[in-house]
Length: 193
Image 1: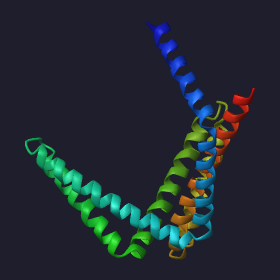
Image 2 (image 1 turned 120 degrees about the vertical axis):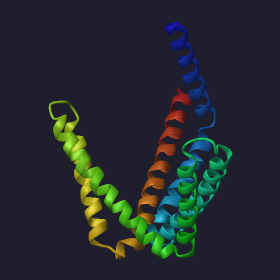
Image 3 (image 1 turned 30 degrees about the horizontal axis):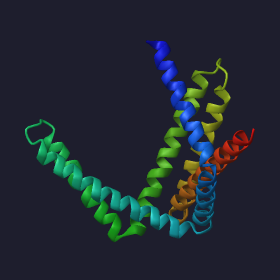
Image 4 (image 1 turned 135 degrees about the horizontal axis):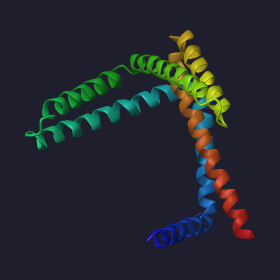
């Protein structure tokens, strides 16, 4: 049974590799597009921050509406009231953020700063806990960087509210673009060999 599963996995991996090799140009084009979008987001962090805030507001409203619908579909379930409350909070929160995206961006910036800081401290602790194992230093370094980033965003508040979310989104999109470019170039190189 395991051999068949391994064979199926290998067959699927070969199919994916072949698909990427055949479409390497599309991967390259997508990577370049994402790279340009990421650079724009970094170059215009306020516009990017507001865009991220508005998209989040829309996601909250849409998700909240579906959660409310879901709550009424399963009214007999014991979690009905909680589903309804969470859905209502998401809708109201999304509307509030949408009607005042600057305040929403400021609130989200504080949340991101807190998450980075807490995640960083957790990673530092984990790094020390796994200390005898290879790679513990990377975990420690990642934790320090996250904690410092959280403190930097917090320390620059409220000014960081104008750039933090857009800058983080831009960096994420930029790296996503580079990953597609790397996949495309590797696929092209292996296709030519």
